[in-house]
Amino acid sequence: MLFADAKREEIGEKYPHLKMTEKAKILGEMWGKCSDEDKQPFKDENARLKEEFLKLYPKKKKPKKAKKKTPVKKKKKKPVSESENDSSSDEEPLAKKKKGDIQQQIKDSIIIILKDGDLDTLSVKKIRAQLKEKFGDNPVRENKSMIKEFINSELEKL
Image (cartoon, rainbow, N blue to C red; front, top):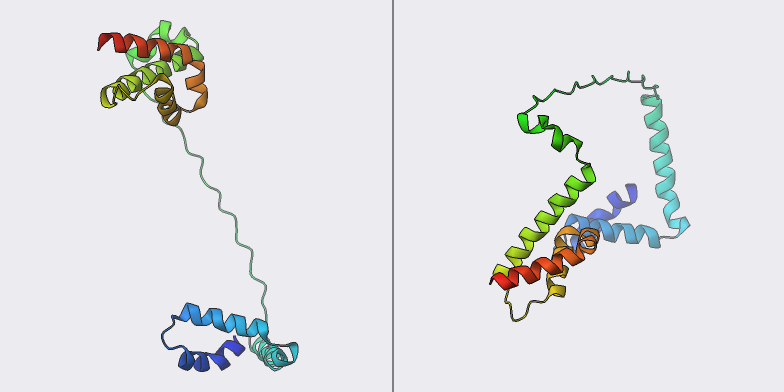
């Protein structure tokens, strides 16, 4: 800081058009290029000022802050709706539910792609690439045959 204070005015006159941040970079480069002999007066002055400061304001140990205990949040119970109460749905394996949902989402996306796309340039491979962007590799790979069959069935409808 002492070096920068001493040279700041000189840099300001030499480069008045630069922003302060750019001037600070120049000052840092100048400090880095200085030899140890050139730096020593600034280091000595820094040590003297630090010693003077510590005499005026001796270090005091900061009291440790008491740790605050955050209260535990209680989870609210949701009312059970009739559809959630359906036992046949509850007994179905979760993986099967998830797979069915993803298959339906893929089918919906295929329909949109077919409607919005140019059928002359679209191919099953291009549709799968778009689906991979949306759903990732695994769901598309796992449903590859279903995707092809669904695309063909939708094309027959058109």
